[in-house]
Length: 164
Image 1: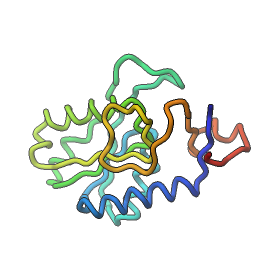
Image 2 (image 1 turned 45 degrees about the vertical axis):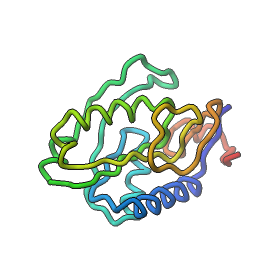
Image 3 (image 1 turned 90 degrees about the vertical axis):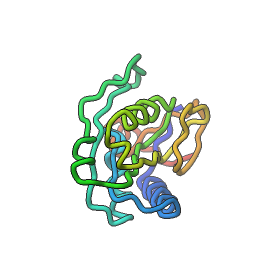
Image 4 (image 1 turned 30 degrees about the vertical axis):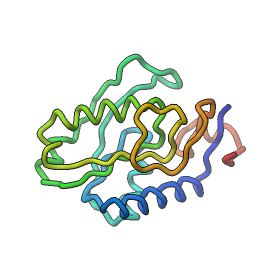
């Protein structure tokens, strides 16, 4: 079942993530999980008045099909270290299996960036059986629900735009 998420829900989710981040401690940089986390990361950064936004380029899906392995094509860790950031908020649109966050957690800790900069994981939505739940999220959803976001081309092929 595909559910089209409206922009109003995206803004609410990003505001909620920003509020939760301030409770934990305001990060000094944002790291987007590309591609789905790019727009939410920008909105959260705006809300927190954070100017430094980086992007991890990762792929774990080919269209709507889950791939066996995560592939990394963009890694900002050396820039985060170079800028001497102390706390990063990692933002994605959805935590499905949790594999992306697990992968990044290991990568972060293996790098020397992990010793100088802490990271907090966040997602707008978390599937109920996610194996690595982020510290910050807006809403849990069922595993059967497939969300279509307004920045995806397939969003515009269906006029229905409401969240159940």
